Length: 418
Image (cartoon, rainbow, N blue to C red; front, top):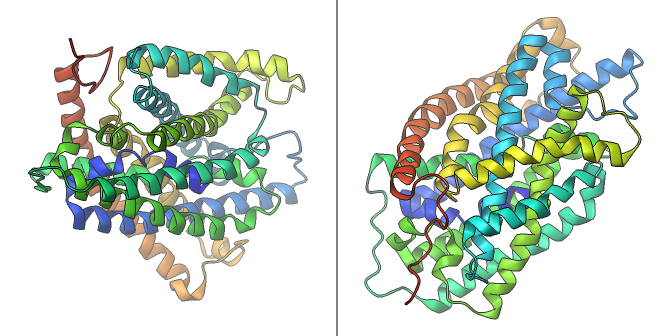
């Protein structure tokens, strides 16, 4: 879980720092790290509540993976299910798109003989092989290896930037405009909103009750990677990052950088699978193939899910700006607003609170403290994340389209030498 969270944004957080400034960058990471952990905790409570109720009704989940929209359906009804399904699937779709864009962006810094769009074609074909991976049980060892890969990359960025030192005439003028400020803040909102697959991961755990503690520990570990790396890269390169959303572009080509690129490529492939697997499950259920035991039939049925992801990555190759756009318009609802509202509505009645499988701990203020936190999360994310963040991210995204155009062959590539 920790590796999947940090892989999504490790290379774009220095870009966010250049938009926010150092102090705001650090504070927003700490703030959204805690807020993300809180809503992951809420999702875990709702999952346990739903599963317990269903198992009391003798429902068998041995050949069925529980998903977030089913939790909403079981606890709150079809309208909540439909809203949750729309936001979750759209976010996971664009989360997969971002991983594919990241693969092309990273490999270019090892081999620039091919442009980034061509690399997107190649990695799209590679990522399509995830259709053969049955479930999250099969990602356990890869998730652990991914943690090692991202740890290496984070500390490479930190150490290499400190050794490199500050570039001549470096400036740290962030925040310079409201648009850049809220774009950077929303990218960090996206950073700690990687728990859209919480329910599927919990279902793959032998003891899902432990998820909330594991997630908090994962968040704390992520902060030990992202805070030093983003701070060091921003210190060394300052405002130059405003036009280089991938931190690897700033550092000289060495065997250590090439190692970081290769490790991130492997891990982004894993993260693509993490984001895409819930989409596979939804599609399988829609075409009634989810409980089919033949993996070949399921793999063939899953292929139509990969095609639009591939296509969108070619249309919008804006590594960095697309993260904050997805964060403001989709993550804000998927993993912050909807879970907080769902928790409040599910336990609105006195009987529901009395019979809850897991009650809020007393050190958080019990039910009163829980509802206070939820109201704050909904209000903050709706106004700051979706409102200001959506406005700023869309302006920044439109600027990228106007500057580079759709289907651009090589986003932010340096001019080729004659």
